[in-house]
Amino acid sequence: MSKHTKLAETIIDLIGGKENISNVFHCMTRLRLNLKDQGIAKLDEVEKTDGVLGINVDRGEIQIIIGPAVDEVYNEVIRMTGLERTEAINENLDEDLNKSGFSPKAIFDNIINTFSATMNPLVPMFVLVGMTNLIAVLIGPSFLNLVSDQSDIYNNFYFTSQAILYFLPFFLAVTAARHFKTNVFVSIVMAAILLYPNLVTLMSTEGVTYTVYGIPATAATYSTSVIPILLIVWAQKYIEKLVKKIVPDVLKVVLEPLLITLIMLPIALCALGPLGTLVGDLLAQAILWLNQVAGPIELMLVGMFVPFMTAFGIGRPVFFICMTMLFANGVEYAYMPIAMVITNFIAMGVSFGYTLKTKIGKNRELGLTCLASVALGGVSEPTWFGLFLPNKKLYVPAMIGGGLAGLILGIFNVGYYQFGPSNILSVLGYVGGNSNNFMIGCIAAGVALIVTAALSFVVYKDEK
Image (cartoon, rainbow, N blue to C red; front, side):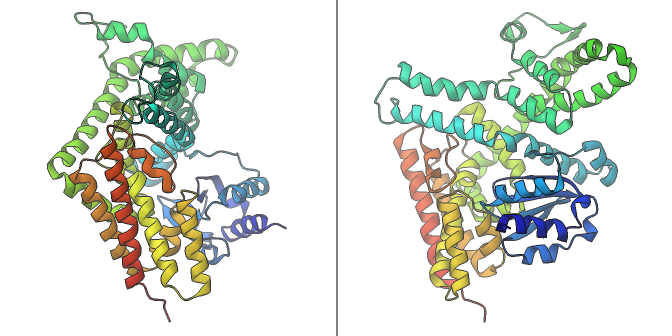
């Protein structure tokens, strides 16, 4: 029996058996489960199991931190339980609301869960966007100036990244359809309508009013957008339920897609599409306002508290908002420079300082594992849950290192331009604009690493 098989078997047994699991999926480091009865799960014993780095319970979801081996353990859990293989949150929004009520917290939790479920499967695509755009920037006139921005080789990479971003609503239509359990092809049709060039041109032409069944449609830009298509697919779920009740079985294949689409047209073009655009604009303006008013102080505070925001998942709402700003503007200044780069270097600093200071062999092995995970694999959760949270003495070094790095980024207005590797090469996200942006970004990352490591070495002491 392999260690992954044994670990999966132990986890299933301790959480109440396979009958107690309603859904299971995973991210890069965590095995995530929804349980039918959380009360019978022996989470304390799970956390003590060899191979488990920690446990986090987030809005009723059990997150078992395993590290880079989570994929193998997940495969074993799927094999043993026979559950559906999926990496998206497979939750029913109605059931969640019925259980927890229409409270502000329940609504907020469902919104965040929806973002997570629809965005997580697209992470490899976002990395592809970042890497192709990075190559274009590096060889283009704004950096190494090897080719002009009109050359075919430059556009090979640039067009690839921009095409993915432009048609982002298509990809989100697929993941949202899986999450809300709607007809995926109808969801894609709705995305196609939002981006159809002739319709976009007609709606944006001055003096021309486009209507849907006599209802004026508001002109809006839906390329690279996130919120509009998520709202539309969410509404589609309820329209589908209604249509399925009234259409006879013999006519379902013919009438269901037609009726759903006809009903969704005014909802999408006249209501939810423009509403989603407005909400996104307001949130973006709020983030920009805070950054403009507070400036370096805002980045310093983000740098100080980003370890806690990352560990407890409370930074996700800000991350998703700022990610849409990055896609729309090509650069983001208020959060992504910290969240996508400095966080990793703080984790490296904590792991490095801890490893140098501890005199316990087992602790040193853990520290080296955490350091390698984040520096090479781009996985910081082992550090946050294996070293940072259990050792309060490491809080201050991480906050000081992150705060100083954030202050540097804020003073010099360093922007984050594209997704790339999440390991030590994450500084490549600073490539863009001009060479100073990348250079100062690297300096800030170095400060986060060195200061955090040095202070961790000074303050940490092994428990007797």
